[in-house]
Length: 99
Image (cartoon, rainbow, N blue to C red; front, side, top):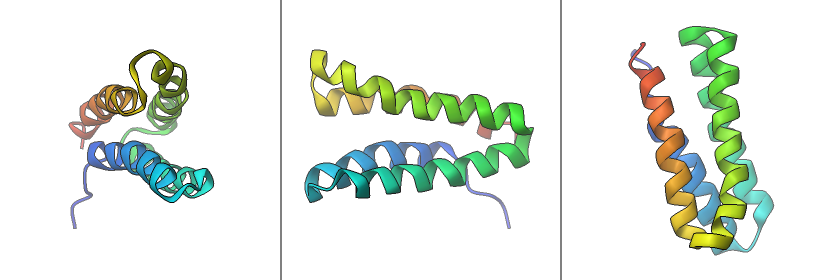
């Protein structure tokens, strides 16, 4: 069976994690969802390109989450989440092309 691409999982993790936290009022549930999507993606990146790829894209994913917070103060919450998701998903899509 072919491995699904990670780019949609990255997008789902960032957008879904934020949506879960916001709608449910429980940040830890959104964080858990975000972490699960990131963990699954990191495992796929490690299989596809080794630990260097997994660490690099994992830092991109975590960095996107981190940067979204100060960016939200400037442009708003949803625009911030969508902007960082676009960047992180594009990086994941480039890695997905390796498979």
